[in-house]
Length: 242
Ligand SMILES: [Zn+2]
Image (cartoon, rainbow, N blue to C red; front, side):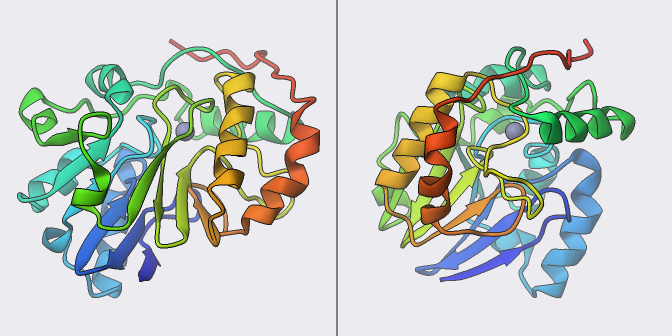
């Protein structure tokens, strides 16, 4: 298995080459498309060679250039949760939730300053949605041999992770920032299901976790943070701009 990051400093676009398949995990913000193209070129991987896009959840910083990827790779199918459908049609992150700590609040404020406060992204047209394979409807092992999909709700209801030959691509179910005390992500929709999803990831015993944001890390880091997660309280003070 070869794993290359074709994303930005902020959000990863993991490209996996494994078992004769090439799979992209998440895109980025809509404006990250040119960066993605140059990173793919540098990695010597054709966009048209991508077999699947695994979308961990329908958020603006992960689903921003799905249309472009689908256009350039006409045979590509997208793997996502059916629960992502409303967000993909709306082109905006879902409401609700809060930040787990002050560090996360600071990043959210920065997003607003960067012009991402409305959390909008290009909608996916119905003819493109026809090329989506909903993980609730398919047997993932028949598509990506040896792979499993983990339901990881909490950050969002539609959050899913891809566990493939020991590597877990967890989207925003966890995040790794070197200066942060915990691997919690910056926005949590529901604290209880978020906590349960950490247990799901720990119990799946991945060899390495590849988050949407930050460097890869070991599952033992989640185990270490697990006791503190019991006291997780969300601060909804950062309101989304409509
Ligand atoms: Zn997210």
